[in-house]
Amino acid sequence: MCVSKKNSDEKIIKGESIMKNKTLRLCLAGLLVAASFMLIAAGGKKTITVKGSDTMVILAQRWAEEYMAKHPDIVVQVTGGGSGVGLSALINGTTDIANSSRPIKNSEVDKLKQRFNALSYETKAAKDGVTLYFNESNPVSELSIDQIKAIYLGEITNWKDVGGEDAKIILYGRENSSGTYVFFRDNVLGGKDYSPLMQSLPGTAAVVNAVSKDKLSIGYGGAAYAKGVKMVKVKKDAESPGYEPTAETIKTNSYPVTRYLFMYTRAKPEGAVKNFIDWTLSDEGQAIVTKVGYFPVK
Image (cartoon, rainbow, N blue to C red; front, side, top):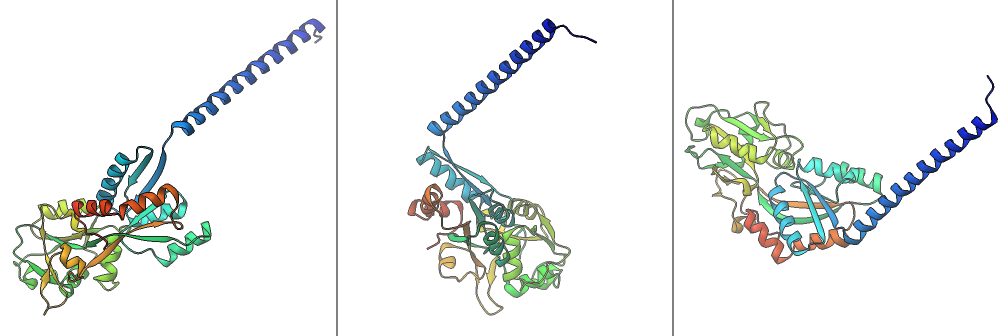
């Protein structure tokens, strides 16, 4: 089929017009995006991401609120998920700071080095006493480390064996992504596996809630969460006195299950991240540690 030269020329002109319009729209869109980025750069805020330990979430949120109130040019975003989740995010490059209630593992250090060619940097941000929670109606008031170990290994299963009533002990604990789960296993259970009867819950608040409703239960977690439950005195051994986690017993390491709470970065912190971490270690930042229910690092 033949097409006249006039019709062909009209089609070319129309095609060129469409292309010009598309180019113009793309240019305008690009200018708008560029303008948006310029506005963000001029009036935007620096964001610091903090992710990890469920134990530290309450503390991290309070730190973030206070810091942002004094530094309106900074946004501190805090999420939990567990120490393992936070350290994985640090390795993946999706968080600036990983909060952890346990020390970083050698395997995690190696992964950071492989990916970023940098060693992790550790900051001891606060101290905690891993607390044993009882229901408030439980008559037992103290346990030795050996008794706690035997209970969570499933070797002691009845309250009568530790001075309580003749009833089955109900175990609550954390999920395996939790730093508290790992710390408790390594430092109380001697690295052995928990009893298969332990019910793993996704957060310390969930453990406390379960124990508060179950008179035959026992749980563990951070000292700051011990609300509405009975805080058990812990003895180093059968002959030692029992202690609750307090500022004095944590400072002197009299409480047998004392630990640090950590903040990890991929390398030595700089800039806004360094300023934030330095502030958490200041007198002002450490006063918040005390208000929340944990203990100053010094």
